[in-house]
Structure formats: C-alpha cells, structure tokens
Length: 356
Ligand code: NDP
Ligand code: GDR
Image (cartoon, rainbow, N blue to C red):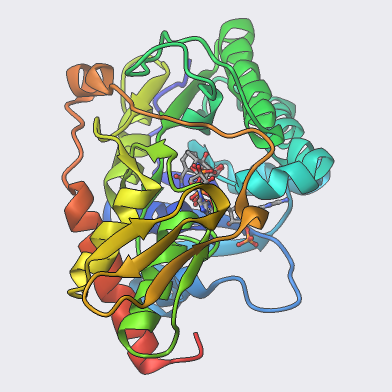
C-alpha cells in the first residue's frame, strides 16, 4: 500500500481533456504540484488549460508543469515517472469517443487498454508501486447491455463497443495489480459528465453549441442520431472531486459516481431549446423523425443515420450510494443546471466568435 508520502505531487495523463483541466484546477487549489502529460499535435491542444498556464501561481510559481509523452510510448512514461516521482497518478488519457472506437478499434485498445498496463508497469519499473496512489478513469460504458437498474459496483459488465471492451481490460488490470502487487489502485466508474469544456462531438455539447447557433440566427437545425438512448448526466466539476476523494481513503477500492437520474437525448434537446424559449414538437418516426419549433413550424432537429452506432447502450442509471457512504460524495449540479451552464457558455462563445 502507499506509504503516506507527504509531498503533494500529482501526475495527470489526459490533462488537456475536459476532466484533466478541471482536475488540474482542483489539485492546484489544494496546493499540489501538478504535472501533466501532453501529446504532440500539429495544432494547439492546450486550450482547456491555457488559463492555468498563464496563471502566475500555477506556472511561474512552479506549481504546474507540462511534459510531452504518449500512452503508446512506454519509455516516455518510465522517464517521466522517474523524473517526477509523483505520489498520485490520475490516468485520464483515452481515445474517449465511443462511435470513433468502431473505426479506430485497434488504436483505442492500444491507448485505453494497453496504455493503462504500460502506465502501471512504468510505476513498477520505477519501484514506486508501494508509494504511488493510482486512479483509473473507468466508465459506465462497461455496463453496456445493462443487467440491472440502477447499476452499482456489483452489476455485471457487458461492453458494447471497442471503447468499452478496451476499458474493461483497463478495469481488470487495475484490480489485478492491486491484488497482485498490493498497489493503491482505484477504478472510478464514472457515468457521463459534461460541462462547457466537453468535447464538441459528444452529444450534449453538440446540442448546446447548435442550439446556441440557432438562437443567434447562425444555423437552422441540428443533425443527431439516436434520440432515445438514456444517460445519467452530471457535471464534470463535481466528478473530478470524487476522483481525488477516492485516493484520500485509507484503502483502495472501486466506486460508481453518478447523478442517480436518467434522461433521454430527446429530453436534453428539449431542455436546451427551452432555455432559449423554443418548444420542440416531434413528428414522424425512425429516420424520418424531425423536431419542429412549435410556434413557427421550422425544422430544428433532423435524424442522420451516420450518427447511429453498430451497437448502442440504451439506458444508464447509476447508484453512487457507496461513494456517499464512504466519503460523503453527492453531486451538486442538477440536470437542468447542467443544461443551463452549457447553454449560457455556448451562447457567450458564439456571440464572441460566430465561427467557433
Ligand atoms: P477527453 O476526450 O476530453 O480527453 C482525453 C484526454 O486524453 C485528452 O487530454 C487527450 O489528449 C488525451 N489522450 C488521448 N490519446 C492519448 C494518447 N495516446 N496519449 C496521451 N494522451 C492521450 O475525455 P474526458 O476528459 O471526457 O474523459 C477523461 C477520461 O475519463 C477518459 O479516459 C474517458 O474515457 C473517461 N470517462 C469519461 C467520462 C465522461 O463522461 N466524460 C465518463 C467515464 C469515463 P488531446 O487533448 O491531445 O486529444
Ligand atoms: P457516450 O457519449 O457514448 O455515452 O460516451 P455521447 O455523448 O457520444 O453519446 C451519448 C448518446 O447520444 C447518442 N447520440 C449521439 N452521440 C453523439 N456523439 N453524436 C450525435 O450526433 C448523437 N445523436 C445521438 C449516442 O448514440 C449515445 O447513445 C461518453 C464518453 O465520454 C465516454 O468516454 C464515457 O466513457 C461515457 O460517456 C460514460
């Protein structure tokens, strides 16, 4: 088990992503020295953490450091862990898009499954397995074709995409290394969480961006896939706090983190339009279905089969009572507050930059 090193030094993979940016903020506020792994890209990929890099306390005060590395490159991981000697590692890096994983199945397995193994082995290679506390970004996608409602830590897994299959391997290798080498390693089984920093191709952000554009007269309609799937949506800010709390417990364990409410994609669309004073009514069915603005009859939602998935996850609803009992975690932001936060941010963004 971890030896209780008092230095507050954290290493984050995936720091440039939605969760990485919020977690970096949270850790800096708690006085941590934060190290983040970024990968080389042909254009800037640090937009979500630019404000931290510009912050004199974080960057110039030596509290935040970015390093090139990649989950597909073991030697970069070993070198960074040797140099940084972190006491907490949060593994957030992933090819995280479920639909894309059907096209990039092998790469998704390389990063999400084998990448997790590489990181765990890098910790062992550096001889830090008794000192480092490890967080793994596991997912409600593991439940897939759900065996019970709501889903808990005991619900059997039935992954429904190459992404979920890769994350299943990562989940079990974390459990195995915890049992085999007595590592302090935890799986956070997080249900969908969103924010104004959510990637633009995930359904919530796609909806809030497009509805903001329609509201400002910059677009006419949004094209979506399956409107009937249901998700348990929370706010990313609440969820990164649960990641940190897991690593502060006396023993490593696996926890479900969820809002405990489920809503369909259709309901998210309706809530987003309601925010800008438009009521949507539905006509037709299947691929012919459209969402019309009640007052004007204008078509605002169209179905495009290119967004359907070969296998879908129909319904997710999490029960996070274990996290509540063990470390008093409960979500603070409701579904409607989440929609409001994302809508307001996207309206501001589109006003400033209509081409965004
Ligand atoms: P994002 O897609 O926003 O961020 C993914 C991060 O991983 C980015 O920083 C990305 O870098 C990095 N990354 C991708 N491939 C590699 C690679 N080969 N080497 C190094 N870094 C890489 O995801 P989220 O922030 O939403 O999610 C964080 C984690 O939590 C992911 O593992 C995701 O699968 C998991 N998860 C997310 C949930 C959610 O609802 N958001 C729910 C449950 C789990 P770059 O910026 O360069 O692309
Ligand atoms: P998900 O999120 O697959 O749950 O994975 P996403 O927002 O991509 O899809 C949610 C649901 O919406 C339906 N959908 C669409 N999805 C997208 N992306 N684009 C569309 O146009 C569209 N229309 C309908 C989907 O079919 C699906 O049912 C997210 C990711 O963050 C994972 O990394 C994470 O593990 C899980 O959440 C929990």
